[in-house]
Amino acid sequence: QVQVVESGGGLVQPGGSLRLSCAASGFSLDWYSIAWFRQAPGKEREGVSCFRSTDGSTYYDDSVKGRFTISRDKAQNTVYLHMTNLKPEDTAIYYCAARRAPICLAVVTPGVPYDIDYWGKGTPVTVSS
Image 1 (cartoon, helix red, strand yellow):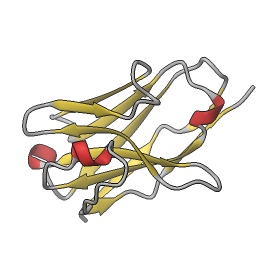
Image 2 (cartoon, rainbow, N blue to C red; image 1 turned 180 degrees about the horizontal axis):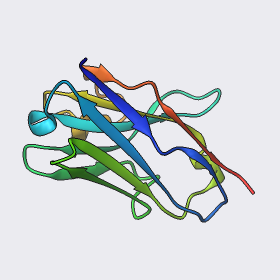
Image 3 (cartoon, rainbow, N blue to C red; image 1 turned 90 degrees about the vertical axis):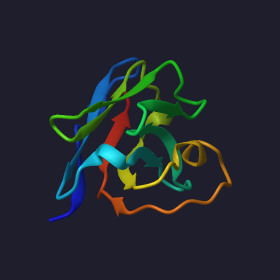
Image 4 (cartoon, helix red, strand yellow; image 1 turned 60 degrees about the vertical axis):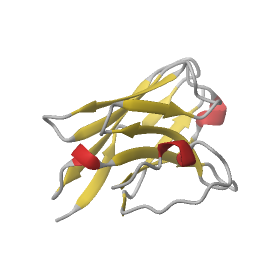
């Protein structure tokens, strides 16, 4: 079955860390852009970060720069989002998505359209004391 599946969400205190995983099955991430999105209650979905497998480039929204790191484990066919210094405003459902095209700049640029091939079902992250 072709899919991406997120894991690693949970409850964490402000200032804490979490690592989210996006595992792909049924296809190789070698030629894909893999992006993380989030959607908080009552807000629109926003692009958080993106990894371009063709050259290893990484992209981040300004709100997470310096705190989040995206990386890929080629052998595990998995992309990770390591989140540090978490803030209450990071609370959201985090979604992983993949597209066989160079969409990363569009993901972190509001208003630029793009398509997605595969969406995950999301993993919740709650930052609260």
